[in-house]
Image 1 (tube, rainbow, N blue to C red):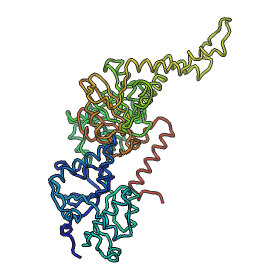
Image 2 (image 1 turned 45 degrees about the vertical axis):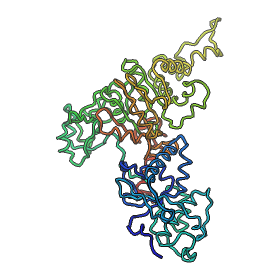
Image 3 (image 1 turned 135 degrees about the vertical axis):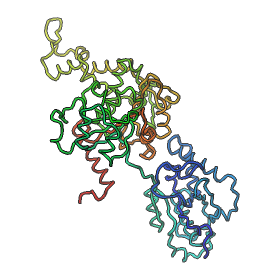
Image 4 (image 1 turned 180 degrees about the vertical axis):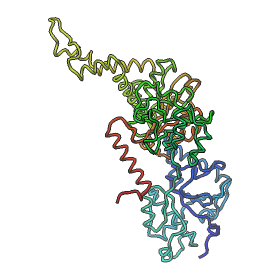
Length: 552
């Protein structure tokens, strides 16, 4: 047996499964762009083989109006551009003697149809509808070619059965396919991108006492002093928040109380223009009481008129939606914006199937914002708060009397008129009518949110295309707020590698108009149980990332 010449260049050989192409379209370069992230498998000088069964599967996906359909269309378009103009014999194609050199890359790509007689050499005869089986068949074909076997059905079956199909790797993230392939002696590997630690917009650091006292007693810390006293720290980023603490509690100034620090003198923000860490200017004017450093940082970013976009991430219950809603309502009342436009970020919304007009269709999507308004009014509206207190403490409000001068015990109308729930609904509806509006994502294209606050909630469920559209909607004297939790992705075919939340964070990184905020697990304040859940989930994620940290 003689090896095919194509296998003599020592290029690593990978057969690509459909799910890899769908999730990572840049595995097929477009001739100019490089892969945006560092891949887990280096394919820069590899020979990539795409089975014809994968092309069939992509063709069936391209009609879908979702991430998978869009990705399938992109891959097929790129592959067509590569193969057009190629002219080869059937033998060259079937025996992988006509690979395509990828422009501006050292890769080569082949599209492999499996010879109909090849399966006669194997005790493995998948049907045409068994796409996974066809991909396994293609991988075995490549392995046989690499060993020098003919694929026209003339190979000796005993020799084929003895073959160890090494030197060819099937790239797949499909566990079922990987199991079937491995049982037939094939080598499989997962594929993805190595992501750096996400940018949080804040750093909690222990600083030297000299640095702490300098910041405590002066308007700013110059960048030169910071770099001199904190030489191992990474470069500061525009609008990055610095939460400073001292290693020894006895080193704090005598008049400084870390537990009660209404002016947040231990938290600074890096001003890239001044090249200095400056004190916070706006958080102290936030409409509600702030309970932790995360909320202080978020409030500063929201209230700062020089910041045009705020990205806030963190676990459920940390106050992302609540604080954004309160800020939007009060900012409109104070004349900072003409209104708040809410864009619910459900990338697979089914509102079109719901009854009613657009507002009625979208009402379920905006309930978190209305719920935040309700909770705010319950605490801050004097009339509603008084009524609520009277219910919690019976006897503090005069009872309604009937025409005989006696108290009415079963007057349903009075109960309905005076119920806190009714009062809250009436007030929330009035606020929504005056200041708030909501539109679906598809209606945001082409919009210009000038003089408006645009609020994008649950942004982790956006794909990159939608995210790119939304972050460009800001107009003159407008502001956008993006909130989400990368650990709570609910949209199909979205993961951290293609989530709009990750994309927006990177696209807007180190920008003087943007602040990024990340709540920590111990800053959850919805309920002690939610905080406990968030902390346990963090521990499990750390154990998964670092197996050596797992308990025995």
